[in-house]
Length: 74
Image 1: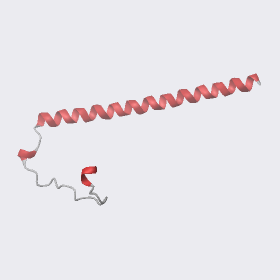
Image 2: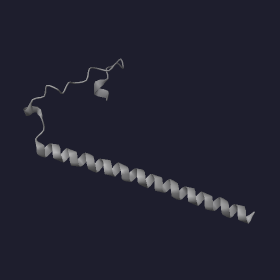
Image 3: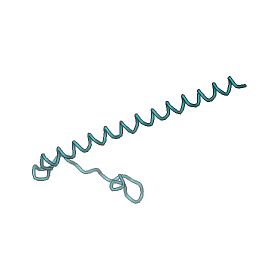
Image 4: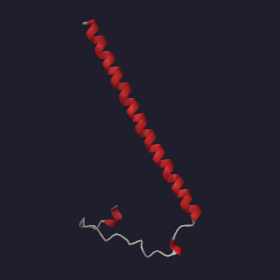
């Protein structure tokens, strides 16, 4: 993002990809490697989100149990 922002904060013109020739494209093998890496990154991010939600759920249950035990002992 910083490469498209000038010193004044005004955005520069984005490059046009409509006139790319076949020689400028990645070989299919390289494109496939990048595609696999992006898919693995997406799965990894989803796993991190799942683990975060599990932690929140477990913490919530722990707090509820703690409050329940406190109320019973009072």
